[in-house]
Length: 439
Image (cartoon, rainbow, N blue to C red; front, side):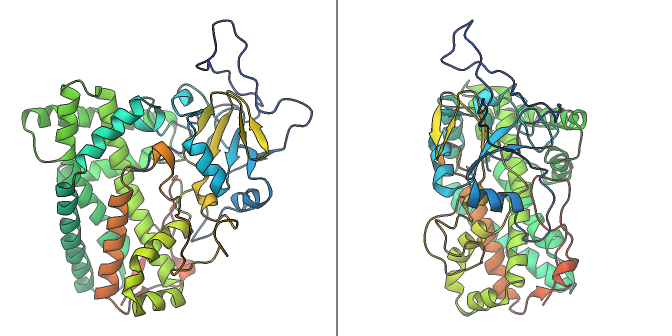
């Protein structure tokens, strides 16, 4: 349930413009001069045009790879939005920016920052675009619902469901698509249980997810879907208030009724949870299986020592480029020194967790998959106040899928050559469209 699910805040705009739209900062008074554009002056650094091309398999974005090593705080312009923004790629600098309250998510609202999508993925009142104290209040409401009892029940149910799904897939015979039979249905089931979404409605949620997380749909199409999904959850909230159940959405609906959060906040929280649960787990777990099956030496080590599985999941999270481009930007509220660069008040800033996870100054031979790696924690779920709310739940599902497959299908292999695996297009998240398996 990453708060970075919104890949940028871009809206259609002139790709040629060099200026960043002025923003009113907390310390500005009426009549003050607006914040200057990034790096004004004759010695401006180059602005890198970043098309964020779709990449297949485990290929790493070449611009991220280069900037990480040569220009760890760089200016970039993407396909949509206006002006340019800073991109921070090194591990320790990414941690600095994401922990620093001087970089605001709330100030991105109404700001057409250059981005990779033609529409705003994250809603203006969503948890991903708030700062403390509102952000702290919303996170606390969700965290309270992840109590030990509910977490234990979800883990047991997830393990039973994974067993059933894998057994069914194997009875049907090879070749079988892992995404169709296991890594797609499992997160649907888990989020249905967690939120209390009726199973019959999951198909509609999947259709809405495909549009909202798209880089190809128009702003009008995205707005129509957002209106549909908001109407759906408004109706479900009214039903849960009248007929509460033991689920997260019933608890959040009751909190909204008590005035602890607004209706838009309730809707945005729920949409964030649904989008990430349905998309992130499917893509990450499917790509993890692909990575293992295309690295036979690593897979053999894991089969020889199943105790490696928890550390293997962490290494796979570090190694796999799980998304295209970057997540959501921040706006500097004052001048801040980051590395060798001064980021000015009003500048837009992105961080790349993907690049940070490949930092050669932190990870030895970072472009190599090594399931025995021990060292710094990966940043796959972000860092700082906006660290992914559902990181533990995602890890649990990925761990369950891998352990179940390795135990039940010791001869698991790809049913097609790796180059014939089809990968997703037109989405902010990466992953196989299908993963045909044999055993």
